Image (cartoon, rainbow, N blue to C red; front, side):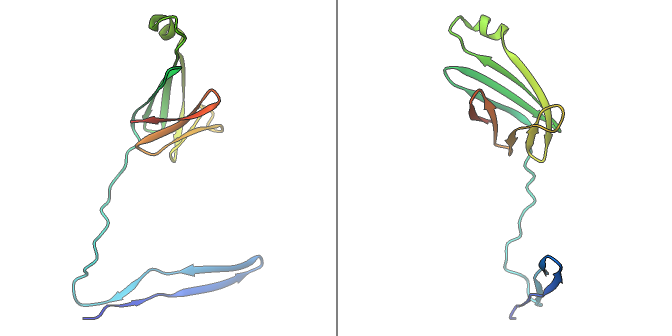
Length: 128
């Protein structure tokens, strides 16, 4: 049997312009559909994200609505010195955006495979 698609569009005029509202696809068919359905894959942003180069090592852990980070600046004076001078930070995660503890200052973003955050004057990408 043939499949017929119907699309319905409505226009409403408001003081500032036109608002267009569209409806979904309506199908009339008695045969099984040949289209593939999208699977519900849930991507989790929880995990440990790392970045490292010759001047810094950064580890950020995302868990639920919170994130915490550790930054080690590599000075050349030895790993025990560098580790003892590590800096720590934490904050809030909301809709894939990293904020400071107040929830007002945006510091980076996370998508489940990578996390982007400012280190010094550079924006660096951390990977899971």
